[in-house]
Length: 289
Image (cartoon, rainbow, N blue to C red; front, top):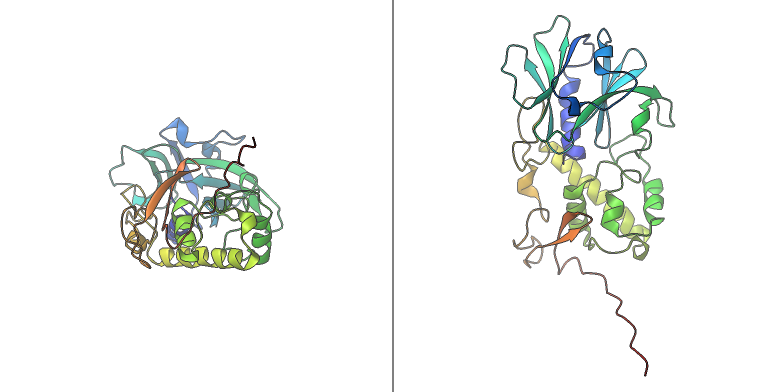
């Protein structure tokens, strides 16, 4: 699933094209590509796009009518800008055409887990935001992100550290890939309990997650296949820099031990068994006779 660097790469690409465009036509090619809302995508015809925004893994196009078109890439979503004369992909789900433009916005999604919807903008402590995104915490690239607040939110969770990192209401934007990379960089096992980590370790972990995602963003994100591409159809190339995620059986870049993979929270976690020591398991107390 695309994470912060991939979604931010898409946002930056769309920002070069969408602001100022007046929506002339919306074509929904697959019903699962839109979420139910009081206002349909077709009701946005005539509205003008003011800006393209992001919070964590969510994107939205702020309109000039106090509404927003909100989008999530899901597992395989692509937001492309293509010429109206270009062939339309068989996986195209939504087309948005603009007045006086030979280019159009195309939402492509092979697995149809991604979606677009229309939402009302509401006031929040961070400014106007779609109501459906109001519960999402700021991400490390957000101007409103506060490191101390994020540490406090993490510290208050009674769960494994990786599960907490994936919670978008604590810190948004971090998914499976960059959680594994940040934990490897911090030498923390994904199953360690948050309560067993001190504030210094939590601060270093968040900073390492930010560092990894910033490097990935410079590379256009991570693409393991052609499902994630930017608005011009190009793949990111940060995959070659990954240290843990997807490296099962390969030597650790620090100690040369083999990277392992374990099942965790319906996902896979990759870690070095030497650098990231597993937490001690509490055994059953001896039976008294």
